[in-house]
Length: 434
Ligand SMILES: Cc1ncc(COP(=O)(O)O)c(C=O)c1O
Image 1: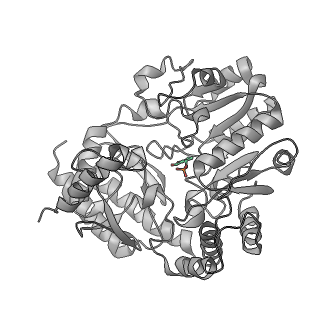
Image 2: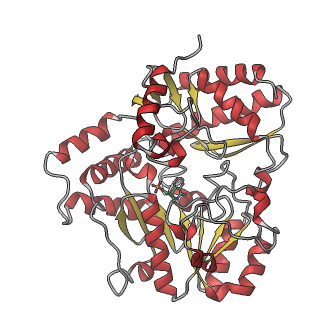
Image 3: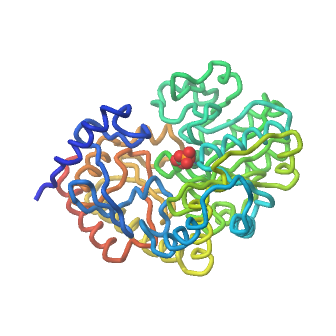
């Protein structure tokens, strides 16, 4: 039975009258007549306003690590919000959250809270510039570090406009970004030590920071090649550049201590949001004591909502659960089965595909042998991927509609959900013509 979308379509019409594109964040717009509007979520499922149930692999772009409406987290939030939500004053619960972040994240000696991943990267960039006295920022094509202007370059433009591989042109991802900022950003292809080395020989001593996602969490979950992150570490040390690891997607997801624990890698600074609060609004950034101690000593940082009680209470409960229960181990086991199952389905159908990422966060690129950066990924069969995803969604399995966005798993996804997903994938791969 095809799903009905009448109520989503009605709500889209109402929403479009009061919001640009009918949504409050551009990425949520899938198109006219196909943008879903949500009613509720529980565990690994969400229901749209038409009452259709989906196994949710978007998980709000990654924050939901335990599951939607997770009872223990919500109970802690409810208990705490009875005592007031905002004071512009520091609480004991908030200090306990910071202690957990510092204990769990290997490279974080001091940290500060923020309210979103965008703010976390924005603050980290200011601190890096202040600490080094330099202004240029180096980022990698296809990586996304939030909506602040400094790094919103070469995120999702077609790779053809990026210029030559060895001397890329930074492409602003939006009108409204001041042209002057073009002078302060350098964009490079991911995973290429030689191009990075050559660039640093030229501008290494002008660079305040290299900001990098541990894997391309906003472009098919492309993994770092062995040694690439370590090369960034050694080169940033050599040139006195602040190495910012953007763990907004990987933090508290691919390991308790994020990519730093996973890769045994200590950056100078790291940024967090998403899984930190299982969906409640909270973010953090932190790093080496010497760098973070610039804050308050000539470096400004703050925000009215930085310790909002729902976010702080949710982070406390989420981190406590992650520290004491086999949450990520369970996700690894189920996610591995899902990744292997999808690979097998594609192999058996004779469809070449590279599956990439971690069990908690992965994707696959079709029709390509190997993918190491956004330019390679751009050559994959994205239209076919999208048709598979659309067909799976119509069958109640919902990855994101944007092929760049990984599939996310949460603790509440059951073995039965994985079975159901693999059955659906088997069917759609059989039935959707390539
Ligand atoms: C790696 C990375 N950094 C930063 C951000 C921005 O986070 P937020 O949407 O909370 O502002 C995102 C969002 O997807 C992200 O994936």
